[in-house]
Amino acid sequence: DAKTTQPNSMESNEEEPVHLPCNHSTISGTDYIHWYRQLPSQGPEYVIHGLTSNVNNRMASLAIAEDRKSSTLILHRATLRDAAVYYCILSTFYDKVIFGPGTSLSVIP
Amino acid sequence: GAVVSQHPSRVICKSGTSVKIECRSLDFQATTMFWYRQFPKKSLMLMATSNEGSKATYEQGVEKDKFLINHASLTLSTLTVTSAHPEDSSFYICSARDEGSGELFFGEGSRLTVL
Image (tube, rainbow over all chains, first blue to last red; front, side, top):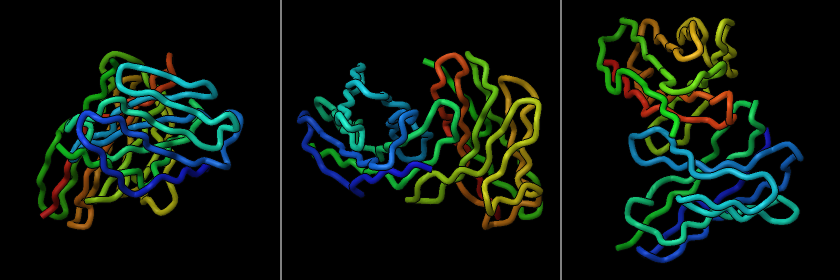
């Protein structure tokens, strides 16, 4: 399975932008980059996904490096409700989805 | 957005009993569903891939006779923990793939406590 590397934890001040990095140097041409987040005692929540181009939605933006070996999830204005574990995952749409350790994001009021 | 519902959200049972957890895709059809378990402060661990109309595919180290998976329709998969023991206590999470978009959606999770 393709692997991703994320920092174990990050902190952000409330209402400031957050950039969550993910390295995926072994990504294949058919792998999509998915981001999910998980609040305590809840199932993961879809955040965003992309293939090659940068993507924006109401929750976040996804910036993908030109060589696709890394990506960054951008939360434009962190709120306390954004405190969660964020998972960066590589998968085609027909593969099983394997979770790594993720990044635990703390938001400081 | 798409919704996946799990039931029950919490269950407490005695050692030796069996517990069934349901996973339903409420507004889309899902040929494929996945079952995960999660221990405190750990990431999700994939247990098995549930395929509608065929046998589930289990990950290495997961006992298929202990964790029975049935995917009888395009909107329902069930996980039965047979002869549960305290070490089976965990947070179990299902996910379903929307065949139209290909995206995965997750249930709210089911916390199993075996006494």
